[in-house]
Length: 295
Ligand code: ATP
Image (cartoon, rainbow, N blue to C red; front, side):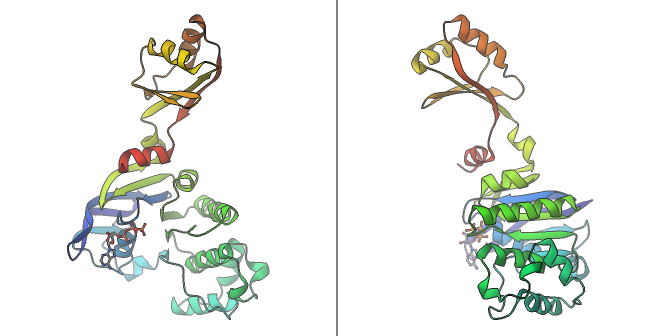
């Protein structure tokens, strides 16, 4: 079953085309990252899915069905930093959020525990760090135990500790079987936490699928030796790679996936009088792939 399937979705704001016929599927049980530079249409996409914006064309399904209010209640959303009452405690703020969602208070202790705020539940919201505020926002999304969470930039403005806390929380929710759809700019973060991605550029989809499959279309071998110019000459005589890049004190060789053989490289260098001090087969980082795709 797919959680969300988007079919040829488009959205114009007057002359600005924010989405241009985007289609992709979010499988159940994934952490699905929607990536793209500023203005690529991520927030517009999430706004349409949550019924805040109307699409100009195309359609989407939730849980393989035409979306309605009952299906939307299975989704917890965090579309922008929520407006909690600063002078009220986390507990009181969640009671208000629960009332707005027409849910009881029974679930509040569970969600506070999940986001690790039980100890501070009676402190005023105004005394919370930004990380705690974001975690409270996620707690609010979790009221009623929705199957799916949609988070727009959940780590926005957080320091590394706050980012790591949200990452842990997302991983934990994923392990519990939730599907998480998140828009983010932080590629390194997305790579650490997401299983699948859709990459948008100026309203168009440029790639989608399993993160490992998207990244695994190229092998990169990093090589270093004391004499880089000499190493480059020797590597120029080697066959099989598609590209060679000198990056400071390192040379990178790019191979079609699955074809790089570090032993052959090592033997070739050694037999040509070069002793390597570094030789490593690497996967392309999501960041490198993202820049390649979005130029
Ligand atoms: P960011 O990462 O900066 O939040 P985004 O990827 O979420 O960007 P959107 O906010 O969806 O992108 O914007 C997509 C395009 O639509 C941009 O060109 C933006 O200026 C435009 N846009 C968004 N909202 C409106 C609006 N209400 N009126 C006019 N244009 C809009």
